[in-house]
Image 1 (tube, rainbow, N blue to C red):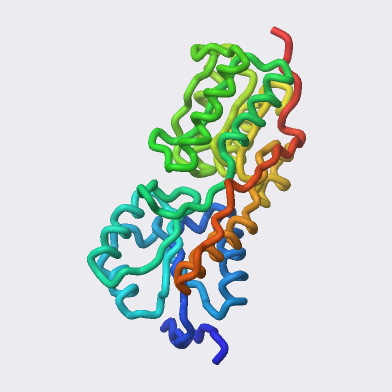
Image 2 (cartoon, rainbow, N blue to C red):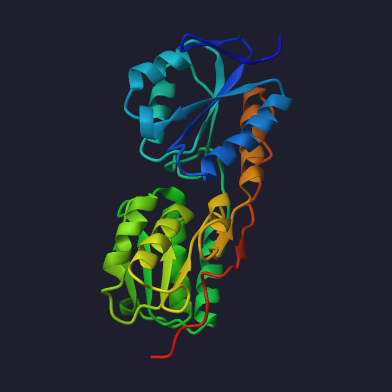
Length: 292
């Protein structure tokens, strides 16, 4: 039987093909729908369909989540969201064991299989690019509590700046949640910081909001500030100016994590890839530092 969904008076009827579950932090960031596309593509080829658990919308409803797992449709889980990973892993341990794989923002679980991209290299590429353009004072925009992958990204920025001899007092941390609205609001704080010429955002959503906020304050990019994001979501081509960012192989990540989970489900040895490579995509939002 082909797998499909039937919508009838808002009731979702699922046909009994085996499924895998994917827990993501949000569906508002275009990164995650693209990753889900890669997962679903690989799962479909191997006879599975994909169910999505949106932690931003449903997080904390553990009774409902446990009930969904207990129904037996899901054969395994891909965990990509922070703060829920530990709870879900504990829940799995208390019930029928279920294979799972970690990726992206999922919290670390000792001994668990994780598929990741090379965030440390990505951070270094950003810093190398900006320092090469003559920038010496930086703002880094990110949340105060970073998920697993972004914590590695943030450490990578600081380590790379240190390798270039940039002192810590030349780097200002600007706190903002992972939304475009927060990036837009952060602009008003950044323009009050003396000497900043380059702004690093932990993802593209923050960067796109920041560009809007800076424009509203009369700032020209990259004349007044260079702005660099991370993820290379589709949005990065449609902001003004187009965003310099780090490209993650999102579809490849989806394929790889699905392959690993399906191997575990079928009791095969997963072929866990090394960290997937990233590349810097230079666009119009970054330029040479203006002279003091």
